[in-house]
Image (cartoon, rainbow, N blue to C red):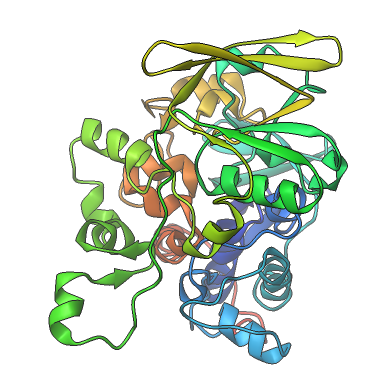
Length: 410
């Protein structure tokens, strides 16, 4: 096939853009499809801050020059490695800047179908063009993976929605809103709604809100650093392991990996958010949503405490800040036959040490492989490891690499 390329990257978030930067530097012949930073631009609320520290929010390029700090310095924006929350607007602008310098080949269109024919992949782009590739990397982040509990999923969308569909929470000004969840997304969405003039209540099964502590001082005495090391995902030895040892994590028994991918670094609020939540609006903790039904233009929630007592709430809208669940079955662009060939880990794709799935040449990166490499894959911080590992593998298997384009390392 004269139009055969070595690699196609599907997705243009932190993982897709980072891999493109590495493949470009290695001269691999590839095409790259997606809308740059789409999820960050369209599904996260205005006014949001990243939970990660500045030093842990870098996309990855081979030389490590195009960091968030470098972008902020070049655009006269405030920045700090530690202790300075990163505004969503700054991070999305950084992603566009990184794309301009490190992934200029990105084609801003969507892949609508992926199939495999005669040992090669065929991709349908924008429902018209057919692209053929030896390898495909799926790096679509959290798109299509939203989880809404069954008890809420039956409600009409005008009464209940997932937190990821709201880029502008100002639409709820003056309305009575219930947030379900107790993690960063729930707490920050609630704070933004409250500050934007909505009446807010938070409902959660947890009996208390967990708050992350402030970042540790970088230049602590050695004894303190040994006792509680600081890493990309936070402090402590277990967090250090999740942050820095994804290859070792993959050697854990699969049952342990899946369990820790779900529960490690669980729901918690950032320390800087605490004052915007506590005492500002009701937190109805230790209560499980056991029923929900429309009542006119509102919704009635039935809650049950751990003691078995029940109560009802009436609201105009419910926002389910209930997270995401990786599932191959929910990726609409994968052909059914291809999907059926994939080995799974609890619904997510199984991948080997180089991110290749059980289908030769089909790779996955990002949150979809948290069950294989750990919770670091749910964060921007994991993009560097993923991009370097995959680029080495894909470069080695590239049959015809082009010379590095002039300015590829600029």
